[in-house]
Image 1 (spheres, rainbow, N blue to C red):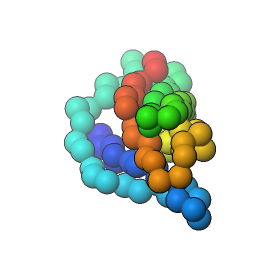
Image 2: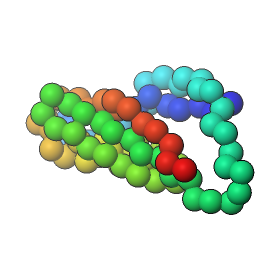
Image 3: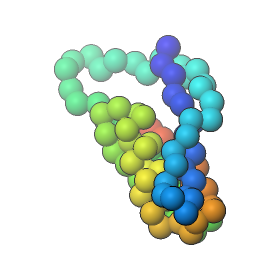
Length: 88
């Protein structure tokens, strides 16, 4: 069973803070039948901006999406992961 951390990016006067809010258990993602590249895509949004990230790990893809959203979001607002999926 795979797990994912729900992450939150908040922009403060000192910079971007990415924190882990909770750990959720997810259904196992089936392994590919043959060796192939599996990547994850993650999207994050705030009322002011969106961000997207693609990586071979879900945590890195979501961290990238949160960073992209956070740099376009005013201080004091938050970006949240809105959805993610597996690219086979």
